[in-house]
Length: 257
Length: 321
Image (tube, rainbow over all chains, first blue to last red):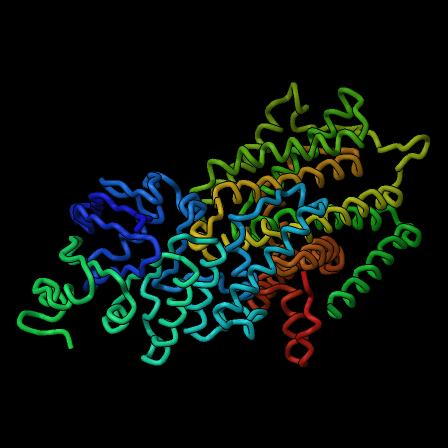
């Protein structure tokens, strides 16, 4: 299968501390690729490097064979990498619909002059933005909430709204940063169905997650980080039986249930 | 939809009343206040782009106002350029300065941005005072000509009011359209969460500079109008305390609300006059009043109106813009 994201020897130093040390990853098109590891192992740092919020100390990243290491975050989004956050970062004082409509910003063109003179093309574009936003809202079953303020949504719906907003940017690769954090088992199960649904649209997913059950259930490929280093990569079985992974996660001599 | 129709009706009624004002008011001073109120409403609309929507604080509004006023006035006095050409020139010059100030302040936020914009305003005033040969220094510029169409002269405050009103309506519609567009949403997204905005594919640097430029554009227009309606300008008019006043107007009207900008501009222009009878107590009471308004009505007057609507179960009637 075609490679979509290639991470080469990425290191990131914060002062004297190596948050990431020479990490390599390759994600193939259509995969659900899970990145796991204990707290502070560098998972979120790696996501922040992929979408340009941090610059790596060394190493480089290829997305669809193009280097993206030096691009600012908004350029990387335009290239086709969407993202949700571990700590929810919605636009709280905007409606659900407006939140998702912001996601269309990078795929639309109308400038100030077209807007002020309300040209035909601008009106058409605005209608298309709205239509697409409502489609994404429907896709994640948030239609009943469309006109509510984002800050008034229940927690689980806020997570979904982050995904809807990211989907509106037309991502080829979607980075999900602990989407199940704070969810109970039932909610997590529903979330997994949505993630499958997103994948079935042909979107590749890089999932950072703590919930081992969820990771084992939906991932095609798993990589494990510990203290900024990749200690294992492979399919579920191999990861489950990897001594180093078990030690990092559970302590010596334990087994995954 | 029904909500919008009601507010369009209210807007038309307000506009009609304003159109009638010059026919009724005979006191020159009161009419002048009406003109000032419109000019401050335009300035407030301009600052709303930055503070209300994008969440960027600016104490430079009066500086851009001054740039617009001086551009238009100097063109008219030195080169005989008519008001109708001076107005866009003032607006464009202010916009250019808006771009120039937008760049260095990109990385600044909160207090630091406040200080940088404050400094910008102070520098503008100092240049206006000290560049004698060009700006005529602290004495200011007198004899700024009035606008003329054919043989019709806008030589009274009553007549000039219609120019002001027409410009205000156009700028109001402009602000409204931008507000409900992809760019308006980008402004708001930056206010709500800059990182999330950037990750949604918004070029936050470009959008912030655009907010500065639009704000300066509005201020520049207000400057040109001011110069030609008062026929006299001097540097001290555009000092940073006026910027503070405009910021208070945004807050009192309801930060982020276009209707609020108009309300704030009008109220804070007329309120000091209404409080004149308090003589020496005036400043103290005015100040305490403003503090109280900001503390107890953080969403401003439009916010108060909206929360009243909601409390009485008419959430459908909230002010849409």
